[in-house]
Image 1 (cartoon, rainbow, N blue to C red):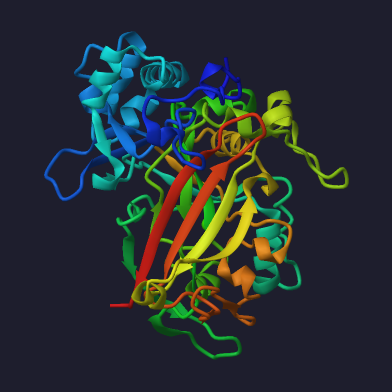
Image 2: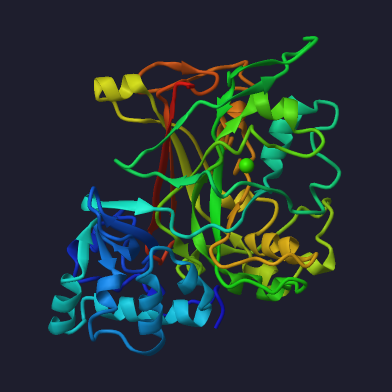
Length: 446
Ligand code: CA
């Protein structure tokens, strides 16, 4: 069995005894079962692992104390009782599957009443919870895998050669910072100060120092690494999916003026390292099985070198995930207006697959560790309206967008703006599953 194998946990006809899990359009039906780390909001409780179902969380620490689980599933739940999911992620796909399947059995409508009652005792309402970053992130790597984003931003940064010669041959990345990754969603907004730094105005003789004037977001997928690999070993593409625990939403906040001045020749530094916001829930690789698509390249493009090519990647390497970006301004909050959607796209347009990212990362012998985080790179679709960053939507800030609910205009982000990322998967004959949201807000510079 592989991560892309369909099984009974993907059956759309299965319902849960928990009514909120069966609501049409719900993010967390029984087919999803994403993992996160939580505690009751405002309490001194220890953070521990949980699984979202409907509007509730199954407390895996509490569940591991019951007699409901056995074998690998029990071992997995005990690992999830810790304050981060690293130990569970290290157990590998057989253990992840065992716990998912045991939870599916306990939560489905045909579960015996005694089991239902025991699980009820382990539920915490999502509305009463606060989250922590789901792993102790050892390393965070940010990829750059949307050819549309690369062309859109390349036109602004390097109009003479927007697409670098390596883009179509290598899943490009740089090593980012794990320390400033935080979680934000719903009422728990990750707030950060507008960064300060050096920037160089076009034609100026010297750079200036001050608050970022071109603050942006980047719509990305969070890719959470499960089992690692030994230093000096490589992960072949045929096995790459077994090293991916799951996926979330990631906002790679970007200070464009700081970034564009500092990034040649070694890549982004202060323009990116001040804050990254992830969503609290990790949708497992197994839950994503129905929403996979073939990986294809236009015939005229360079085809992947053999180490980045594999039959399984060809048949099912691409993920179809619908994605929204919304802005909620201070004015909207003050007036009680809804957040405005500013773009919509799908992850399927990405030029490289998540498996290819894992293989590329380890190809030189670099070791990945359980709980490591990848950003997929900004996700932009083929037309401008599908841009995954505001710099694309506004053509470098030259053509401001209008926020529909308030009528405000934006060239870049203003203080008080919150950015919300949402994602979900839909396919005929299968359940709709959602990622929840990531939400962060920029505060005025210190
Ligand atoms: Ca990025």
